[in-house]
Length: 202
Image 1: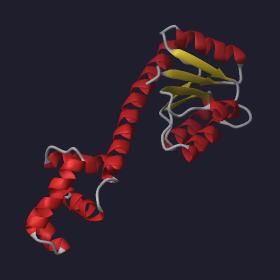
Image 2 (image 1 turned 90 degrees about the vertical axis):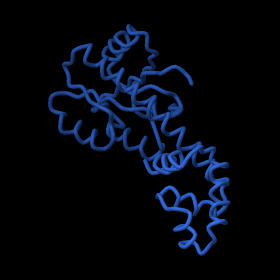
Image 3 (image 1 turned 90 degrees about the horizontal axis):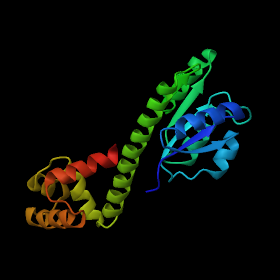
Image 4 (image 1 turned 180 degrees about the vertical axis):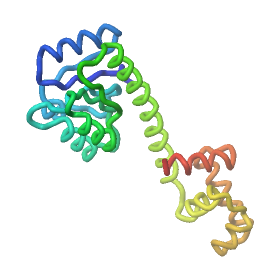
């Protein structure tokens, strides 16, 4: 995986340079964008990191960019909004819509750096969860329709006998299907199957 990048999106060149200097000071890679649209046009969602975004950027606003990212991508890097004193209500709306955090001007340098570091850690954790979900989905696609049914019922905690009654099969047939499910999903135990089912629903 590539190194985390902090995307700074702010139309004020002086503010953007100041933020860049601050964040590069803790050895983090930074990319600057003067508009939300420019950022959106070149954004690669596979790049880890976070976004530091002025909520009132002209043109495509910070909140509109957040909406576009949510519509376009299953997962994108977390957003930290920079807000003015009168924008707290707007920032709360952004958090409710999925933003990671916000920082209110004037802010202390360390406050922003702490939020950036937390956002990068959160991003790495979320990317791990998304990757695992994709891996499980791909494994499940190798199951036959009947094996998929057995997987679902086993993950709900049903015994072979109950599953056999539910599906109108013999216990022996259910046992065979269950063994195939374990093999195809690389599961070592019932607990593994339950965890996989939970990760898909998370």
